[in-house]
Image 1: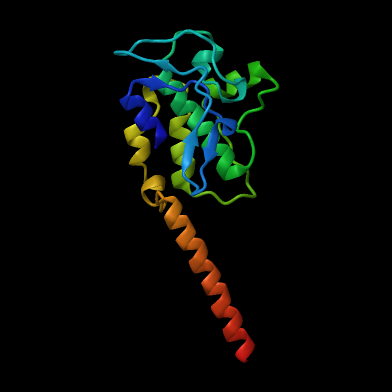
Image 2 (image 1 turned 30 degrees about the vertical axis):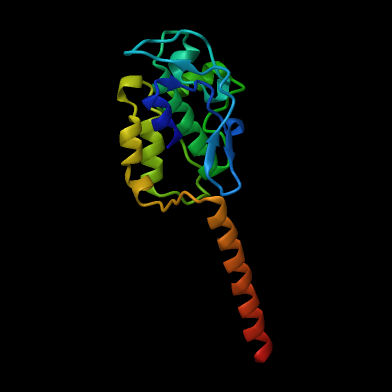
Length: 180
């Protein structure tokens, strides 16, 4: 995860959102817009309101000092929720209601979309209203859902080879289909 790397160099992004997550030509995740990023030393807390309200952790909305790494976990959970459901978890047009739902740890998932309990649990624990209770980066990486999700880092040459192989497969299918 990019977040593990950022933490290893003591940097909190503080503006994670769908718009700041890109895919390269090989579909590898890349983060962008480090305008609110900050170096964090030895448990240092931040107090600047950063990011977008829809992705903001409750401690930011409550304007209390916060751990930049834990607000990144919160925002990553919002991004994951959007990725698997296609909708926002909270109605950010009503800030008080949104904060109330966050503090009560209320998270509902669309009923018409099948989601495994593993991904629901991961999101639920990443969105804990108490930062100390949120999953750490290590716990996220070791979560059952991520461990059971295949992921490969691809290079440009691998992507090209894959495209060539897919084209060859299509060609073979067409050839086999024309013989019948």
